[in-house]
Length: 86
Image (cartoon, helix red, strand yellow):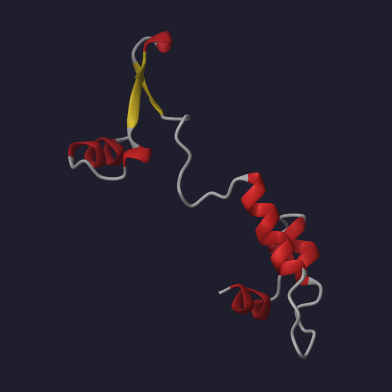
């Protein structure tokens, strides 16, 4: 909470500021209405997953990566899959 107040005092990263919730007795809460810029919307994630699924490489070493991305199961990826994503 202190870090979020510091961000507000410095007018930085407005999407991380706290707001006063009068329904909860004036407690400070995170703003839920603003989505962070680094989180993909469902339509954007679908586009990303489709692109990864259709990725063609000469050695076919990323052929199974698409199904893990679509299921949002990133823990099953291998280290070379992460390098392809980068």
